[in-house]
Length: 248
Image 1 (cartoon, rainbow, N blue to C red):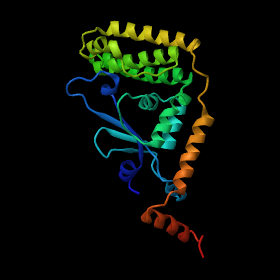
Image 2 (tube, helix red, strand yellow; image 1 turned 30 degrees about the horizontal axis):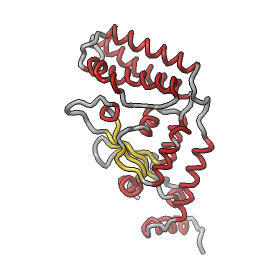
Image 3 (tube, rainbow, N blue to C red; image 1 turned 90 degrees about the vertical axis):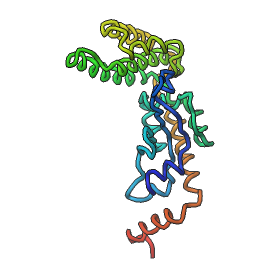
Image 4 (cartoon, rainbow, N blue to C red; image 1 turned 135 degrees about the horizontal axis):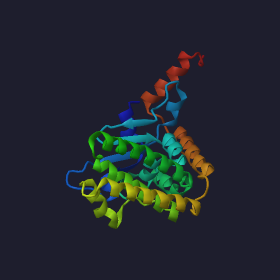
């Protein structure tokens, strides 16, 4: 089955991410789409497994296979967790609604380490730009500040909200280069310190609810296995068994 076919026919959840979801869109902002698809269970019976992710078919589009998506979310991957909390949902079916109902199961204090690690990596890149070019890439500086805000809010409240709300204008001023780099650095340091403090008293559990997520994944796989298989896909599976000497 072609990767684009998996996205077209088996997507369970699709949303808009990036500046539009963060409340930071301006004229000319791209529309970044993200989604989750479920590869039919029979495709896993072959040596060649379905892809864990697919880029496209449209520009600025990216999708994860459900199992990979859940693995990353359980590790508190910032991009994946934020995808689950986008306010701009474009498509969701019954399985997708079950996934959204599990949002709380993925959240844990692990987010402090993963968000901090990602933020540190991005900050090093900004500092390298300052050393090389005398200024950072201001758009990236804005998004790093946004990430630090999101991290602190999550750890403090136990809820992940990605729209920046009334912090839009101060952040856009950074994007326009209207805030000096020393002031941006000071802002980043303050936000990082607030996140560290929030982590010590966070209402989030130490670990995500692996069992609840795994039960969901197993149910989805079992349900998919019981559905009628498209003739072409079924023929491919049977032929693989014949070639392996498993029939006759």
